[in-house]
Amino acid sequence: MGVVLKSSNTSTHFIKFKNCIIRTSNSDETFTIKVLSFLYIFLLFNQDLYKNKKKGMMKLEKVKVFLGGTCASSTWREELLAKLDPERVETFNPVVPDWTPECQAEEDYHRETDDICLYVITPEGVGFYSFVEVTDDSNKRPERTVLCILQEANGTKFEGHTLKCALKTAKLVAKNGVFVAENLDEVAAYLNNYKKDNPKKLTKKEE
Image 1: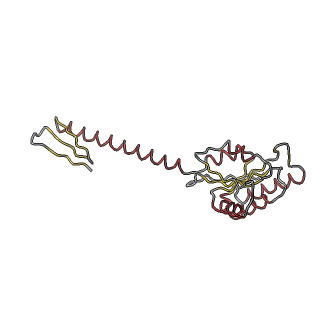
Image 2 (image 1 turned 60 degrees about the horizontal axis):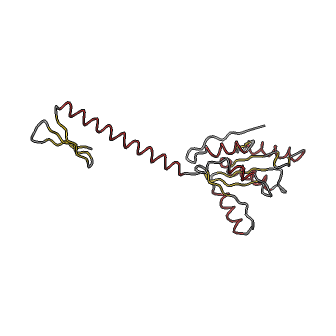
Image 3 (image 1 turned 45 degrees about the vertical axis):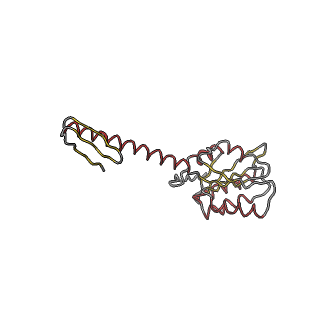
């Protein structure tokens, strides 16, 4: 690790460490203290470099999220994006102006490969396919699935039998291991703190 060189003058020493050469003098005791101090500082410096490098690598690792759920004229995606940390979360929005077979293929790819499949379902939807998708994912990949049912959105509400079915679906997928959030703030908090290499344990909400 280091080499100590002694000159003809016994009171003068040189330390060769890596590509550094340090000249020391005085007593052997002083010399030893200087060597140890130098090594200590060197190790601390390299430890800080390692921590900063590791921190930088972790910062670049984003969680990829598929934004499934209600489309129509719903604004929940824009509202959620405003709450997400762009340094931590990368999203895929399947909603496009002109739908093509290529768009379907890309959506299928992200649903299969993204770290999280998020389904936010609001009463603005005109169909029930999102309920089918989240139920399917709760059986195939519950640890990667997140559901949020907004009972009210932009002046519309889930009511009566429709509300009952929506809440029953949430209870069913929660039993399968899906994380069920009550609002977009809970969704954002979960995604912003999600770690790909060590995801936190999913919370099952059985209401």
